[in-house]
Image 1 (cartoon, rainbow, N blue to C red):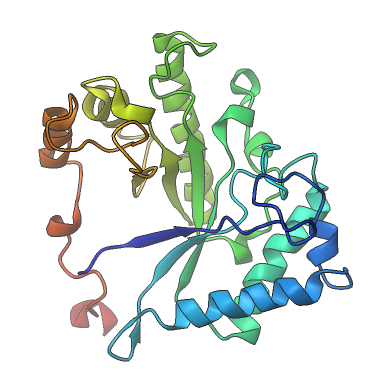
Image 2: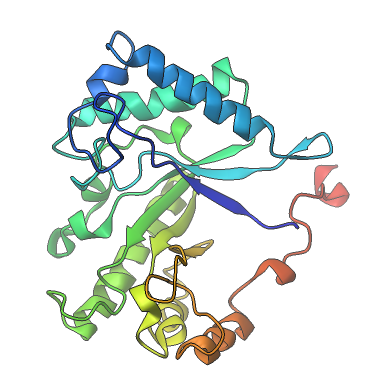
Length: 271
């Protein structure tokens, strides 16, 4: 269809057999020399098999791949406190090297996406954001996951402070992306149930437009729609549906129908 796909990877904890939120230490077990390394490689082989199957004819479909996301939080087994910074970097690099070198997969764009809730806004800095950064050769997308600054009711910050934090966090990743020659993106966000009728335009879009010279992000990804209570995009008849239409119609947003075959080679540019 000509869309752009972003994949997250919620791999289970191979040490215990638990899910991604089982915080038992496992990274050292799955790295080379670890007792679960063979099982991890088997998981990477299955992943590679799936990724290689994503084709139109003989052409591989580019995928934004987001492994080991929100690592600066402690809720995943690969997160801060459940492994060392050095172990996390080694895990990220091994994953990329194995897929790129061993499996010869070259249609992935790798996203680095810390969680905003663990960035200290009062001392926001590149060093703060870049905790666990695996290096420029391993990252294509400078991402950020941010749920706390997008209208969450009952949070620690006022709506005005949330808005400031939202803008400043996007300015930061834009600055880093520009310095590194990468692409910045809001790799995960949302308000569960979209309880604010103007969420898409007033909470997300307007602050970005108002700071256009300092914010360059390629996309905004909201989380899944599971049911009418747990969802992050509106359904027909929802209180935010009309606002979402306004968001879609804005000249600053591009949806699938607005993109003219991004996978077709531009002959003029390829000369």
